[in-house]
Amino acid sequence: MTNSELNRLKDKAFQVFGIFCTFIGLVVLAIFLIDIVVEGAKRLDWDFLTSLPSRRASKAGIMTAWVGTLWILVLTTLIALPLGVAAGVYLEEYGKKGRWANFLEINIANLAGVPSIIYGLLGLEIFVRQMRLGSSLLAGALTLSLLILPIIIVTTREAIKAVPRSIRDGSYALGASKWQTVWNQVLPASFGSILTGIILALSRAVGETAPLIVIGALAYVPFTPSSPLDEFTVLPIQIFNWTSRPQEAFLTNAAAAIIVLLLLTFLLNGIAVYLRNRQQRKVKW
Amino acid sequence: MWLGKTTMPGLLKINSTLRVTEKIIEGLLWLSALITILVTIGIIWVLLSESIGFFKEVSIVEFLTEKEWTPLFANKKFGIMPLVAGTLLTTLIAIAVALPIGLTIAIYLNEYAHARMKQIVKPMLEVLATIPTVVYGFFALTVVTPFLQQFIPGLAGFNALSAGIVMGIMIIPMISSLSEDAISSVPRSLREAAYGMGSTRLQTSFGVMVPAASSGIIVSVILAISRAVGETMIVAVAAGQQPRLTMNPLVPIETITTYIVQVSMGDVPQGSLEYKTIFAAGITLFVFTFALNNLSFWIKKKYQEKYD
Image (cartoon, rainbow over all chains, first blue to last red; front, side, top):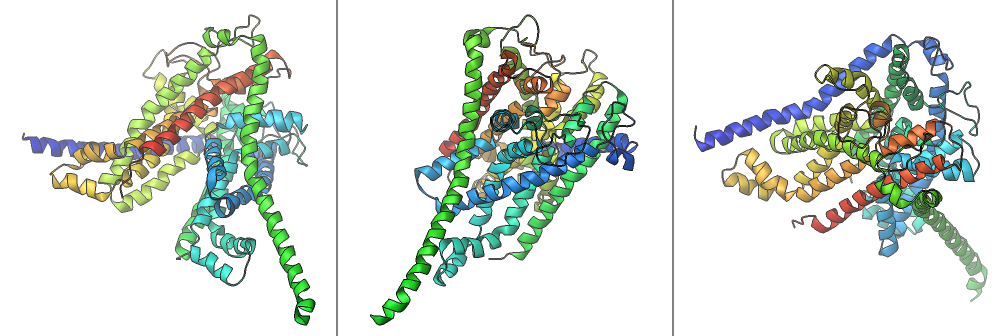
C-alpha cells in the first residue's frame, strides 16, 4: 500500500468514526427515552396525575408535584423576566462603555458559570432565613430567578444587538427620546428573540432540582400549594425521592413522573425553537 | 417675547417631565443591572460568613489534610479531600467520555458532513443538554449501572463510573458546539491551503484546523470541566453517599455537591457545626468553578487567534 492510499484509508476510517460519534449520543438518548416510556407508561394514568403523594407506591400520585412546578414556573417568570430584560436593556443601550460596563459583563459571565447548588445555598441564607420566607414557593422562585437571570440578560442583549442602527436613528430623527426609542422600536423589534431566550431559561428552571432541595423544598407535601408562601414540592424533587427508594414500584413511579417532566421541557423547548424559526423567517433587516 | 411668555413655560414643562421620567427609567434599569453585582456579593458573603463560623471550630489545616470526612457520625472528622477526590473522579470520567466524542463530532460536522446534515444534527444534539439532570441520574442508576454490571462483576450499585459516563454524555453537546464554533471560525484560506498541498480531510483537520482553533477548543473543555464539577443530581442519584479517598471508579463515592444535597435532605439543626459544613463544602466548590471559569475567559481573551 502506498503512503497516499494509507492516508486515504485513515481518512475514511475517521469519517466512519465521526458518524459513529455523532450518532452514539443520539442512540443512547433514544435507548433512555424508550426505556423510560416502556417503564413509565404502565403507571401513567389520570389517577397518577390527580393523586396526592402516598407511602404506597401504587397509590402515590404527582398532583402536588406538577402543581408546584407550575407555580414555580409562573412565579419565576414574573420575577426574572422584568429584571433580566431591564438589565439587558441597560447594558446594551445605556451603560455600554467603560470600566463599569466591562466589570458588569465579566460578572454576569461568572454568574452564568456558578453551579446551581451554590444558588441554593444563597437562597437558603438570604430568602429562607434572613427574609424569613421559609421553604416557600416564593423563596424557591426567587432562587431560580437569580439562577436564570444571567441567561435572560445575555439573550436580551443579543436580541437587542441584532436591531439595526437605522431603526434607532429613524426614531431619534422623529424626536423620540431614548426610552421612547427603546420601548416603541427596539423592544418590539427584538421581542421574538427575547421570548425565545426566556422560554429556554424557564425550561432550565423547570428541570432544576438541587437548589430547591437546598432551600428545603420537601418531597412529601400532603396538599397542593394555594399561595406563594406555602411549602411545596416539584416534579424533579419527586422524581429524585422516588429514584432513591429501594422498592422497584417507586422506580416505575419515577419513570412515569419523568415522562410528564420531559413532556413539559420538550414542550417549552419546542415553543422556543418554533418562535426562533418564525422570527428568522419574518425579520429581514 | 410675548409668544415665549405663553408657550415656552408649557413646552419647558413637557420637556422637563420627560427628562425626569427618562432619568427615573434609566435609574430603574441601572438598578436591575446592579442586582447582578449584588448576587455575586451575596454568594461570596453567604459562603464566607458561614464558612468562617466553621473554620473557627475546625482548623483549615485539618480541613485540607485530614483523610476522612465524617461530620454526620459520632466520631467527627473534617477532611474535604475525600469529597474533592470523588468530584475529580466523576469529572475525569465525564471528560474522558465527552472530549473525544465531542471533538470528533465538531470535526466531522465541519470537515466531512454536508451543510444540510450539520443543520439537522446540531439541534438534535442540543436536546441532550435540555434534559433535566435528575433524569440522567435515573438513567445512570437504572440503565447504565445494571448494563455495566454484566461486564464488570465488581461494580457496586452506586459507583462513580456510571455517573461519570452519563455526565459525559450530557456534556457532549457543550464540547461539540463550542469546539465547532471555534473550528468554523478558522478562515477558509487555511483549509484550502492544506487541501492545495494534497492533504486529506483528516490531515487538514488535525494538522491545520484543530491547532488553529486550539484556544477555542481548550475553552470548551475548561467550561465542560467546570460544569461537571458543579453537577449535582446525576452523582447524587447514582454515585453514592460514601466519602472515600479513592480513584477507584467501581465503588460508591461522594462528591462535594452530593454532600450538600445529603445534608439538605436530612434535618440538621440550623447553626450547628454540621449545618455549617455545607457552606464550607460550597465555598470549596465555588473556588474550583470560579477559577476554571476565569481561566477560560483569560484564555479566550489572550489566545483567541485573530484572522483579519
